[in-house]
Image 1 (cartoon, rainbow, N blue to C red):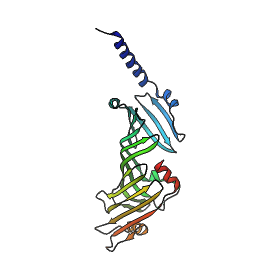
Image 2 (cartoon, one colour; image 1 turned 180 degrees about the vertical axis):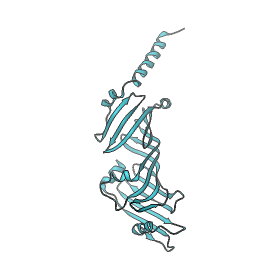
Image 3 (tube, rainbow, N blue to C red; image 1 turned 45 degrees about the horizontal axis):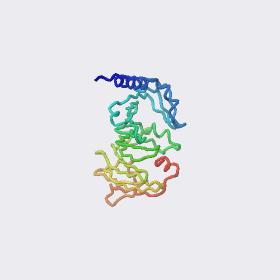
Image 4 (cartoon, rainbow, N blue to C red; image 1 turned 90 degrees about the horizontal axis):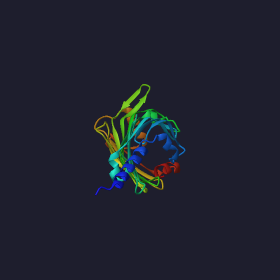
Length: 258
């Protein structure tokens, strides 16, 4: 026998969801708990999709932001969004059961020169190329890191300063992090220098680095000068070893493990 109350309940549920997801995003933002270091400008849209002219985090701007809701996550009891902007994309997921926040299959791409402008101290030369950050998975619970893995690729690593133009290729740093430590693996992407090695940073700020650099052909004099400054030359002439260990500054450690 047909029970009209079930149909009415389903209709009301669909209506409530429709009203919720079509709610203007400006009415939702005042109820979100955001850090004082985050500022939004030019927000327009609904919970389903919209755009933001710029998002500024610690005075670092992200412009041309567009977001859209991913309904495929509903079955997993997650709220998911894809965010696209000028320099890359991010896929966000919020677990409704345990409050876990995830970032998956995300990519950021910035010119090195643009990033260096944010540093408090100037570098003795102007590096060239672009930094490409790829995040395979990042998970946070209660605003604390649970796990992260991905890679940082420096495309066209070199020097771009006045008459000095040096490009020695693409290099990669793979990373995996937990609340206790970050581990790094260095290699080249068929570049002018053969690079192998790794490193680790622990939650108390201690770090170790061991990287070997070699070349089958002559090394550019500008690059050789830099390698001799930061590494120890091997017996073969075109081989160098960079070994470092020590303690990170407390503010850097807090940024990595907060």
